[in-house]
Length: 88
Image 1 (cartoon, helix red, strand yellow):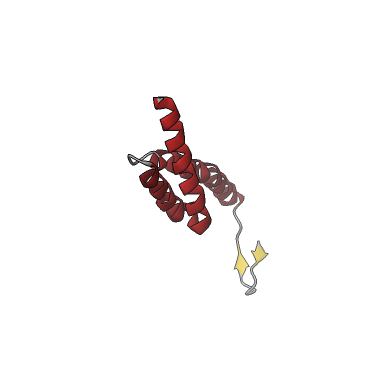
Image 2 (spheres, one colour):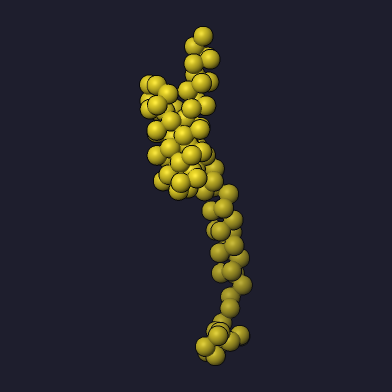
């Protein structure tokens, strides 16, 4: 038994804490992976440089805000350059 800040008695169950840590660990591993996958997939959408950069920027804005938009636009441009080099 321990006391919370209000002085009430609270029962702390270690099993629930272990489950919560496992859930948080999974979230911290899979969330960035999913974001990067989204960047890669959506940055490839479009038929020209502007469309790919715009799609990457929109994805980045949703995932990580203004900084993500800049990164997403860069990813879109890089995908476009890689595809152009592959077609030559």
